[in-house]
Length: 70
Image (cartoon, rainbow, N blue to C red; front, side, top):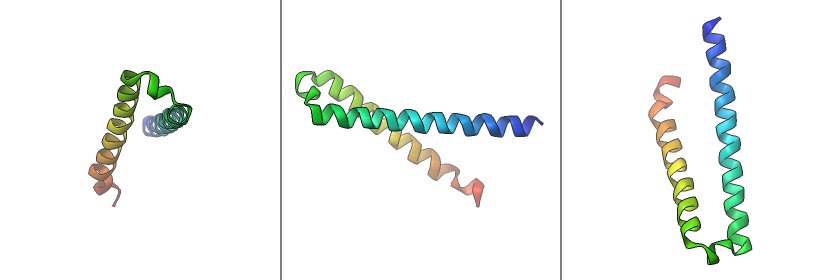
């Protein structure tokens, strides 16, 4: 029972993380096309850095843990 609950929680967490990442990426693309970053360089730097860092850590986590699924 515990393993099933853990699997469900991990699955829901992964879906929420993916949805949050997709929302942040689409917001970033809208801000670029809307010209928001021309007015506020700090927001541009922080949002771009956050997305790049999250992408890097996600790829690193995925490649590190691929061995356990083989």
